[in-house]
Amino acid sequence: MRKTKEETDMTIQRMTAIARKLFAEKGYTNIALEEIVQEAGLTRGALYHHFNNKKGLFLAVFEEVQRDIARQIETEAMKSTDLWEQLLLGCHAFVVSASEAHNHRILLVDGPAILGWDTFRKMDQQHSMKSLMEHLELLQKQGMIKPVAIEAMTHCLSGAMNEAALWVAEHPDRQQAVDQVMDSLRALLYGFRM
Image (cartoon, rainbow, N blue to C red):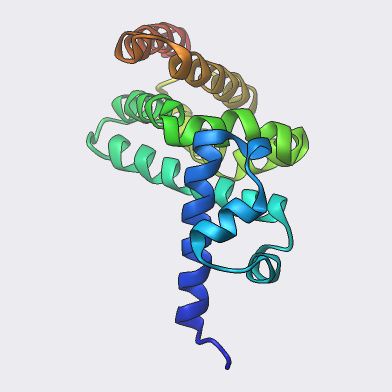
């Protein structure tokens, strides 16, 4: 019996939700495909049909994490109409979201290791770096930041925030770590401000 598109979408969502939970809790290398399909109540064949293999499933989960974080950044940034404040709110949202237990291992630990550095960077550029670069370009057009190379600035900020999110995730006092990161990011960003 053929499945409807809705049933197929529900199967994919179920599998990615379970895989996301398990990858976040135990890490990619510590999860067997059998564990994912058993918890999902599906077969290995279903997983192979929709994702080809475990790495394909991880890629789908990774993309979902990227999209979720991008939505959180957008939501937080739009709480202000001030372009500079939007940048700071977006940076804060990224550090908080990327360092959350259900995101940081998938995004910043297993992502580069499993997908490879080139794939990780391309995906990062398509998601968070793209919106960061667009916002920095807008700030520069408005005369709010110095005439620096926006692409270079984007890479510097993105790398700093990725590393900061890893540090926050491992810090015993998460809120204190977020506050310290934001103090540092503000100081860094104000160095670019006109």
